[in-house]
Image (cartoon, rainbow, N blue to C red; front, side, top):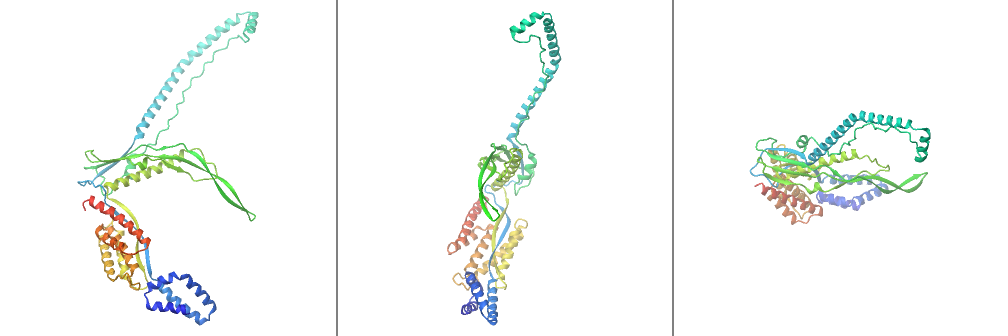
Amino acid sequence: FLFFGNILNLFVNYRQHYLLKFLNLNRKYFQFIFFNYFCKKKLMRKINLLLVLITVTTALGQNLKSEDLRYNYIKLPTNPIQPRVLNYLSSMSSSSDEENAKIMAQYEKDMAQAEADYQREMSEYPAKLKAADEKYEKELAAYNDKSLAKKILEKQLLNENTKPVKDYVPQPYRKNVSKPNVKTSYDYPSLAATYLKLDGYNKLSDNALSYHVNMQGFEHSQPSVKTEVRKEATRVNNVSTTADVTYYYVEFTYRNPMSVRVANSLDQEIFFVAPTELSDFKTYKSTASKTYPSTDYIALFKTVEDKVLKENLTFINHLVNDKIGYEVTLRETSLDYVKSKGDEYSDFNEAYNNAEAGFKTLVTNEETAKSKLKMAIDQWTKILGESDLTNKKARIDKDITVAIYFNLIECHFALRNVAEAEAILSALERMDIPNRDKKLKEKYITLFLDLAGRKTANGI
């Protein structure tokens, strides 16, 4: 009972959020004491204890929370085109198309030759049949003119029947020309329209940039079926046994190399790159199964080819936008607020609501978004005037202060305020904060170094 009396004393003399920390550390101990006390004491004491726990629950209802935040922002290019160009046109081609054309041309040539040979042989076929008939009749007449004794003697001497046999004249047939395997050809205008887009530009031909991607074509190794042995337990009649089970899977390597070229309206090259990430072979491994897989890989190849095509074009488009585009980029982070049943932190949460509204409209309504974010910054900055890092009973203690700092840093990132964010990061450097917060701080340092470089490149 003295233990809970001390808890009540804490509740009276300290702020609720400080008590919360103490209670969280001793949660299991409270549960143990409550169970024994509730089971052993009289009803009145049970009621008193219940009132204590209700008070404790009230304290637990107020704490610092972190909410996931997803929003879009416009990322500045690392290599902006100067002077600024407003339009672009995208296109695609494949080096394999030229190779395919050569292969198909040879195929058509071989087919034509096979047809010509067939028609020639068919025209010669009657004459060959007639010649064979005439030869046979002539030889048969000569054979019939021989005496029986001579026929018997020749048969014995030659050890074979000397009666003539008509020559076989085979029926002409068309030579089978197998259709060659060629690399897939695509609807390139549709692919370009779907995947090759420059954010911040108009798709118009007037003084337009040329954004062109060339594919080398899908390549793959010969698939092989591999095995792995897994131990699996079975239970029959409450008797458990373990056995080795063989699983099969298909494995092969593949790639679809691509290059990208961007040029101005005079076809002067701005940049060209063939990413090594797309030239390196990757390994495909199917899901392992107890059943031996089919060796008809045509459908599998097609599935992998289509998948890697989309992935590579997405990679290329991000690469180009990162260099010269104004890419609409998804950012996934978090924002802190205080969960409280009272209105003690209503000013904090009002700033949170303004910031959240600003983040969500940053791309669709930039003017309103900036106004909301600046409002949140002003509100949190004002609240920081109460910050007391050494007083754990303060309304804005160290934990709340750090939360505000990180919220402000995120707002400054959205507004591209590098100097303001760096000042806050410097303040965090001087504070003793948990490792989790240290890692978050390092991520922000890297983020703002990148932002500062992009602003410099864009003359901002």
